[in-house]
Image (cartoon, rainbow, N blue to C red; front, side, top):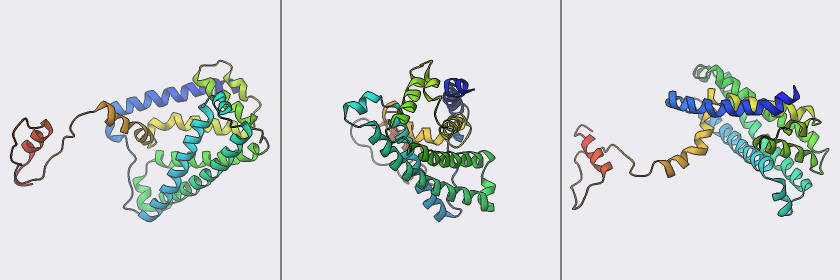
Length: 254
């Protein structure tokens, strides 16, 4: 089972996440969002959302940089394994606590308010519960990390994560003797990745890639609909295509 969960399951999770996200975007692009309930108990939403998203962003970036940066890079810039371990514990611990507090506030708001509960799907409740469980497990691993301040326990997970992306057949063996809390944390994390295309978590992908899409894949004018009662007078020279469209759609009633 160890080889399946840490040698095969990562590819299943990543494959489903990538292909499922593409399929959802092509088939149901208007569901590619997270439904807002801001009008219902806005104050709790704002505070909880800020804490949750800031904490999760720090954790996400920390995991990506910490696990996928080649070990020789840290050695080259003079960051020891022990220093990296302490930084991960301190920064990850603070971010984890912030995200957990914010997540609990969001979960309480969504679970206890009857109006918000009616606007929430089963998947909304489940995915938020899984994220809270994942945050709690991540904080629990700090206890084991503090027993290995030399940093070499973290090196095992770096070797495993980089081995997955380089198709190293021995990747699962690198963490075979890791503590159970770490293993459960990894499996739950991969399960959340697998479920991403079927939940509101797809909006995370939008936050990462949509700015790049508009910057590099959709150059040109932005087409808008004017609310002027009369079109602007034409100037000498060609009229931009976007302006032509706006003027043709404008009407006195607007």
